[in-house]
Length: 104
Image (tube, rainbow, N blue to C red; front, top):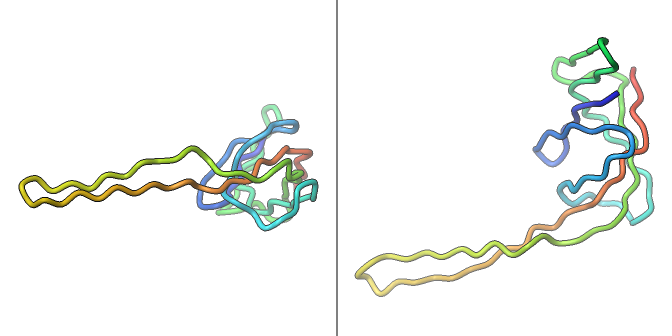
């Protein structure tokens, strides 16, 4: 059994026991989180697709940790104009462990 959920503007295919990194959520480490934006649930040959979400369906997860990803380096450069700009960015994430998938 697996589900497709939406969180942080991205879609993820999850199953019970999976660990994934999503955009930062406001929750403490060890807390339980319900993800209600379920787009699709597949259980063997039974597939239910929402329009856009399945009403009453939710995916439960536990917050494992919070962190920041690798640094992405940004370089802006204009030739012959004596312009050079260097920046960096580290995106925050939340690591989730999926505990269950509940249908509506």
